[in-house]
Structures are given as structure tokens and as C-alpha cells.
Length: 131
Image 1: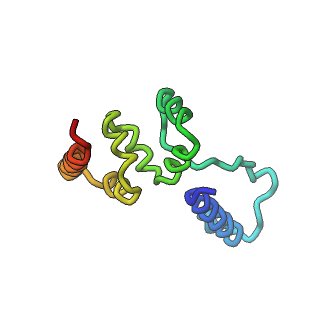
Image 2 (image 1 turned 90 degrees about the vertical axis):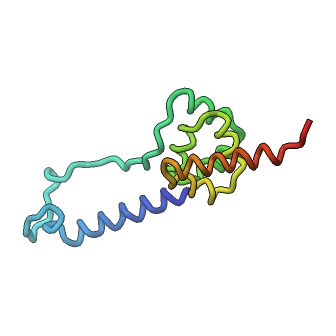
Image 3 (image 1 turned 180 degrees about the vertical axis):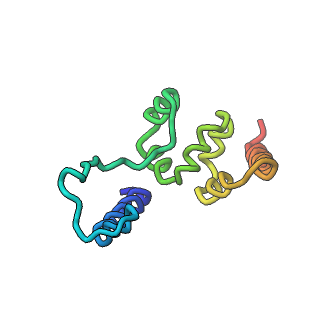
């Protein structure tokens, strides 16, 4: 189970525990009576939000080997979303950098991020064999 699923389950449990322990506090009313069956609306459990992927991205994701899909799923949602904004050349490089660097790169903004990409691309060019 993904870590984000565990966090979502914990938050959901804590929220329901709070509401069950203090129903009047949840809606701002002071009441000692529990809500009647007519007042309670059934809800379906919600799946955690995944980054929005278009049709092309979903097709590409589904074409990856299972190992790559699993590696991608371990990234934070922000990093997953950032990946899809990259041009193809940078997407290929993105896979080659450590996950902790991917997360740091995702957190960067503007000029700092671009300078980092220039260094990554230069390092990749310099590491290729000549010929």
C-alpha cells in the first residue's frame, strides 16, 4: 500500500473519531443527541487524488515495464505531476537521477530549477563516450 494511502486512511480515521466523539463540535452546534438515520447521508470512500494525466500520458504510463510504473508510483504526487511537464529529453534524464534529487528538483522554482537542469544535461553530455 502506498504511503499516501496510509496517510489518507489515518486522516480519515482521525476525522471520523473526532466527529463521533464530539458531533456538536463538528457542525458548530451544541447537542447531546446523535443524528438520526435520516440526517446521516451515506458516503462512498474516496480514492486519493492522483495527478491528472491526459490520455497520452496514461497510454505512455501503461506501456512502461511494471518496475518503472512501481518506481513512478513511489514518487510524491507533485513529482509525478512535474514529470509530465518535462520535454521528452528531460523526462529521459529524470529517470537517471536519484529519487531524492527528483524531489528536490520538483521543489525548485524558475531560475534555480533551470540552472540545475543545465548542470544535469552538461553532466550527461560529459559522461557519454565520444564517438
